Amino acid sequence: MQIGIVGLPNSTKTTIFNALTRSQVATTAYSTGQVETHTAVVQVPDPRVGRLCEMFHPRKTTYARIEYNDIAGLRVGIGREGGLSGPLLNAIAQNDALLHIVRAFQDDQVPHVAGSVDPARDLAAMDFEFLFSDLLIVERRMERLAHDLSRNRVSPERQENQEEYDLLARIKAALEKETPMRDLELTPAEEKRLRGYPFLTLKPVLVLINVGDEGQDRPEDYAYPHRRSEVICLRGGLEMEIARLTPEEAGLFLAEYGIAEPGLNVMIRASYDLLGMQSFFTVGEDEVRAWTIRRGATALDAAAAIHTDLAHGFIRAEVVACQDLLDAGSLNEARKRGQVRLEGRDYGMQDGDVINVRFNV
Ligand SMILES: Nc1nc2c(ncn2[C@@H]2O[C@H](COP(=O)(O)OP(=O)(O)OP(=O)(O)O)[C@@H](O)[C@H]2O)c(=O)[nH]1
Ligand SMILES: [Mg+2]
Image (cartoon, rainbow, N blue to C red; front, top):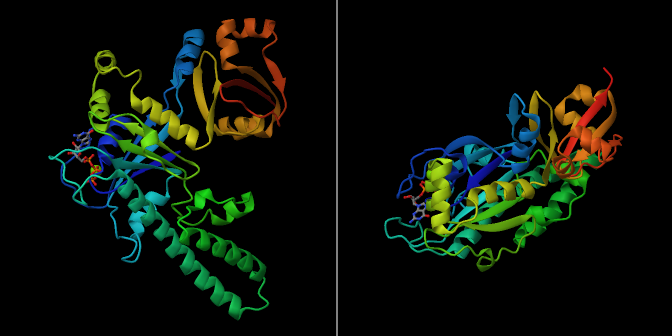
């Protein structure tokens, strides 16, 4: 799972990237404007994994993972100048979701590209660049399709092309009204049709407002009228400092500032939710492991995530809710209590299920 960090030049993208991934990439008061990507993988913090480890004492512990890409080089006006360059578009389009960073703090030491700090303006400006990028792609594709449709009256692809053209026409109308593609009602077949294109407004987005050292943590101050998106506020500079501390030092620091939990843990979980993902666990003396699947996935999907052999030879899954297992204290006790169920392939997995797949080879 990959999340792209985007925003205006100097919007504190790299600061947030460092905080999220405990990296030490240099941040600068002046943006170079260069297209440049930093990548790091982080574990999804999940206290349930730690508690399962206390029960099983496994040789190995594996958390779910998210890859973050800090992408520099976007700016206002890029769309009107003919669209995002290939490398920049690819760097953004390869992500499953976007983390859009907006600066909302005053600091005379940190110049703003537009000369003043105005988060609502910046948020809208960057959104417009994404809309414009999608619109250019839609229009180019529609031109091609119209050309083919006008020439090959009896071609075998005709039906396909006409359907795609109609879908793109609907999308074009929405984009022209500044509705992002993620807010359209699309059927699974339509979504599949769009999958090959580098559409940016189709991606779920988490808007992160960096409110600075003194700022208020109030997302409701930053209304964002789109579905499949969410706004959170963070004190970016502070979070980057916290990420550099040892866990003990961080604890003291958080207490001093009256922060319950590093904002970044909250944020990593929020991005996980936003992507419509959930976790399930496999447990044992060898390994306690968190796995990632879509919400709505079945026991068979879960088996396939572990190994294709498990899916092919699937017989049944033994399933127990993580909390029941923790309360029972052991698998045997959970069995005695009747909390370990046998489920078939179509069972809808719940977040936090602990699963053991029975299969034939
Ligand atoms: N006062 C204050 N300054 C901050 C905070 N977060 C980041 N900065 C400063 O903002 C400046 C820009 O931060 P970067 O993270 O480099 O911004 P960027 O978006 O990665 O910039 P480019 O990659 O060049 O587009 C740096 O000088 C940071 O130290 C904060 O919470 N408070
Ligand atoms: Mg940067």
